[in-house]
Image (tube, rainbow, N blue to C red; front, side, top):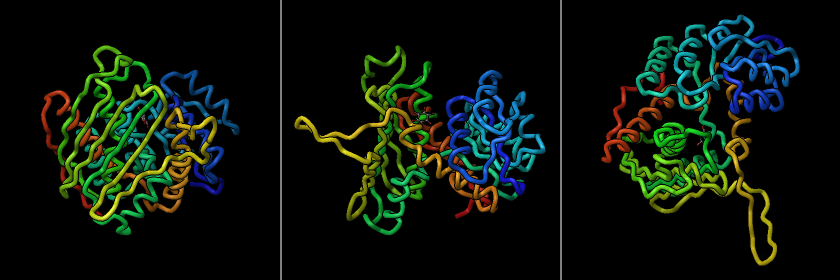
Length: 340
Ligand code: ISE
């Protein structure tokens, strides 16, 4: 961190890397994007050209992490590359915001947790942006203030208009449901200890062999039940809903729309088509909190432990999908670094 602000290097210049780069430049005072890289060099060149101020294009993430003029790293490359890149950031003692998932296997995510615990200080934030969404923040505040008493049930609906090509059933659990898993763990402050995946007849609009939609029933360590619906070929938009039912009331996420149109005997609000649009305020808040945590050293958002826990829960869900039966989550012990 220098007098001119925090110099950020971005690994991955695809949709998420570009979204973060643009938001850092436009909406996060004190951050300067100084370096980018991507497996497709031309993509990194294009993103660098878009950002004012002479952004360097580096050959790969490890080179970028090693640059003396990169103070903090944002990892937005494909999930399978995350764990090794985050480990390299820990090695270099650099703060890192890693897009979800933290890793593609629980054992790789655990390696990150163990490396950070050995270091003894938190440098990793995982990009679970819902924790910064105004609606989710209000919902957690109301729950924590006792608005509905103790939670008994949670419903989380996650619909995408259309996924990227090649998005298979396991990815729906590891890449899509992982958000719902983190949101519910965070909202309830409870661990998800078992998963049962149910598969209705797939939509005919889904590629052969892909099971979509999915219903997942999770059990928590405090005896609550959580039902997640994931439907990534929902066609009509990006629709995120959440309701918590407690002993004396219920809390439901209000739609993020700001205006309703009444016309021709109908009332309607727009449904966003993409997660970038739906969660735009959340991404900005996430980046601002991350930057503040880089500057003041006080961790924000989801930790490496949260990243690991979410991967472990999704791994149990994948096992349930494959076996057709209820599967308990195998979780390691939480290191003291992540207590509280
Ligand atoms: C994607 O990777 C995301 O993170 C989105 O938030 C989620 O809605 C989508 O299903 C994932 O594929």
